[in-house]
Image (cartoon, rainbow, N blue to C red; front, side, top):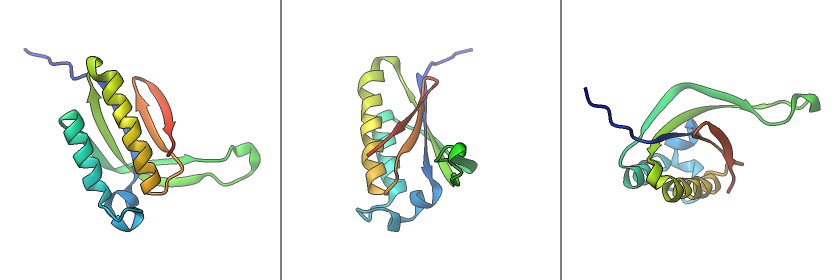
Length: 120
């Protein structure tokens, strides 16, 4: 048996409507192709899932405001320990630019068990 450790998993969510429809991109570029190109070129591969990935987020329930709901496409990449600083930082910067391009307030990213929000 052979086992190869690929690294620490990083997962992020993008609203599924915005992934597949270029009208949501301020640059009028295909978001799915942008993501594919970046992840493949930077990490050598990735996995994604589309389906029942949904979430509620937004105002605190104590404020009596309605939380937002969205359905997402989920992306996963493995980041090797020796690349953790540089490649993880590249991922954060890419997501910040993407966030601005698709007019999102923030993008949810999990890496090494820590959840963060990436803002433009």
